[in-house]
Length: 409
Image (cartoon, one colour):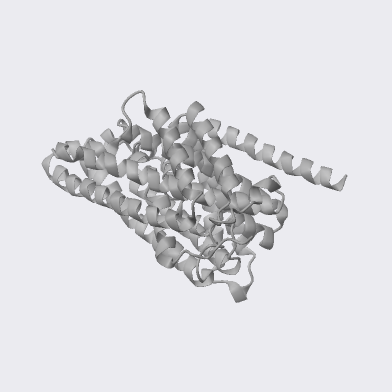
């Protein structure tokens, strides 16, 4: 049964913004600054460039293949089933880890000490339930969450300008080339929601026109927001941002706007919820597409007749995310997520590169830059995250090889 086309351009942009303006903008600055030092803005520019190249590839592919599944479906059509499977598997495992990271960040801001894990689990369960009752509710709720998040970020930026004029920030450590690239890899985690719109190609109205516009609009809006926040953190806290767990709350405190601290916490919690909601939706659609092709168990391909959503996939994903929340920490979840997502977009660039001239919307050089950027950034990730990611990717490949062998036998 096909999914219903209900999402407008406004809905799609809101979902893209909700995926990007989430936990990352409230939590990534400390680790990124620790890696990049005084080169933080350069790292941000590199991450934005790679994200833009990847976004144009996703937009070009989505316009020709307006179906659920994102690069899983695109790579199957343009390169072959094996590359599609690897892309889909990397997306699912990477974004499941992202969901856990978003839930943990929400709980860190919203829950008192000792209650973070139960609150994170409850958040995952609640938003999975929202997804199970229809994508239009998802789009509406995401739009509300984005607005609240932007209000909170506006308070942070305003406070930062007053603090910057009151006291000099702590001196930044010197930048190194490797550190800047590692910082870019960490910042890419915060950008990586831009193509979530493409994974919902089967539910967007007029997808050939809507999806490319929505991806570019959402990414452009996020770049502006991130640049403003980055400048605020640098001019207000400097190197001190690398030592705190909530740098945007520290900006407000440094400015003397202590009474507005709760506003920042609410905004951080809200942004995390928005990103978590959009991520759960996108993973569900990729899981649905993979199950339709038997690359995941076929029972996950069931679409609920009343609400037109892949409910079984949504529930299973929520259970796995809850399991990660119970056993992992935030830093590990971010590193593992970045590994899967960068490989996913590497394949997206390869698939877009193979498209013929009559459907090409962007020059091939953008796909080359995007692919090289993904390769460079994935090699800056922590060794443990890369090792675990490689192991999980190999497990997925082994599963598909076994399934194909059993099918032939």
